[in-house]
Amino acid sequence: MDALFNEFARKREEIFRVILSLPEKGTDVPGKISLEKVTGAAGAYWQTEKTENNKALRKTVDDPDGFLKEIAPLYRQCDLFLPGVQITYRRSKKGKITRLENKGSRASAKETHNREKTAFIQEGDRAPFLVDLGVFTKDYKIARPMYDKYRQINRYLELLDDALKDFPEEEISILDFGCGKSYLTFLVYYYFSVLRGKRVKVLGYDLKADVVARCNDLAKSYGYHGMEFVVADVSRDVLTDRRVDLVITLHACDTATDFALHYALKRRVPYIFSVPCCQHEINRTIREGQGDLDLLLGHGLFKERTSALITDAFRVKILESRGYRVDVLEFVDFAHSPKNVMLRAKKTGKPKELPRELFELEERYGFRQTLLHLEEEYERKSGS
Image 1: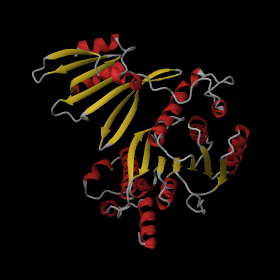
Image 2: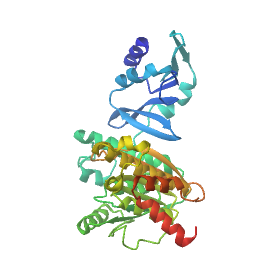
Image 3: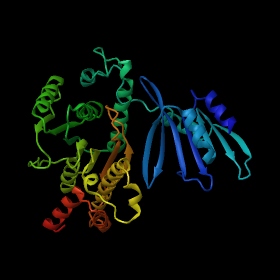
Image 4: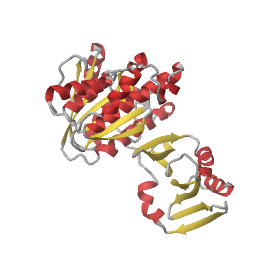
C-alpha cells in the first residue's frame, strides 16, 4: 500500500475526501469509513465518519497520514477524491494492488458539496460573545491560540445544523438546562437568529444565581432580547409549560441529565441535544451479577467507565422506546472534557413500552437508573 500512502501525501492539499471500503475478512471494522477535509476561515482539518449500529460517528483526526496508514490495510479498496478525479486503489484476494483513475467522475459532481464545508461562523462575523470568550479579538479576528475552540464551535453548529436545517417554523423555542456561562447558549441563539433569520426564544436554567444574573446582563448587552435566564433546579422546581422545540442539556451533572431528558420526553419535545456528565449514580451501586459485565467491574477505572456507558446506553434505549431516533456522536466541548458523548435525538414515532431488559439488567447488577424510573412512574400515573 506504499503507493497509496505516497500519493495521499503528495496530493493531500488537493484531496478532499477518502473512502475505505470492502473490509478484509476477519477484521472487526465498519463496512465503510470516510476521511474528509473540513475547511473554515482559519484553516482546514480532517475528520472521519463511520456508521455503527445505524449511528453516524464522527471524529477529528490530527494526523491523516498516520490514520490512513493504520486503517487502510484493513480494507481492500480505497478511493481518493480530488476535483474532477477519482483515484481507486484495490487489493485483490491474492494481494495484487491495482490503481484506477477516473477523470470527470462522480468526484466532480460532488466537488462543490464535499471539498469545503464552510465554517458557520467566519472571521469578521459580529459575534460579541466570542469576543468575551476570547475566541475573537476585539476587531472580530480569530485569536490564533483559540483556534481549537473556534473549530469546536463550528463543529457544534455543524451538528445542530445537520439536525435542524429543515426546521419549518419561523419561530423556535429552546430550553437549556444547566446553561452555566452560556456561551453555547448564545451560540445557538446566534445560529437561529442571525444565520437562519428566525425568531428565537431561549430560556436557560441554572442553579447559580450569580451566573444567571451575569447571563441576563450579557444577553441585554448583546441585544439578544429573546433570551431569558432563570434560577431553577430541574430535579425539584416547576418548569416552564410553554411550547419547546429543542431541549439542550450540556453537562448537566449526574442525574440532572435524567430529569432534563424526562422533562423533554413528557413534553414530547421534537429535538433533544444532550452531553451527559458526571455519571456517578450507577457506579455507586453496581455490583457483580455473575454475568457478562462482571469482567468490566473488577477494577475501579473499568467500573467507572462501564457505569458511564451503561448510563448513556439506558438513556438511548429509553429515548428510542419513546419514539425518538437517536444519534450517538463524539463531541468535544470548550474545556476538552473527557465527557464527550453527545446524544442527539429527534421525535419520529409514537412511544412504546419501556424495554423490560433494562429492568432485568438493573436487578441482576443491583443498580438503579433515574431516567428509567422517572419514565416508569410517569407511565404508571398517566396510563400511557
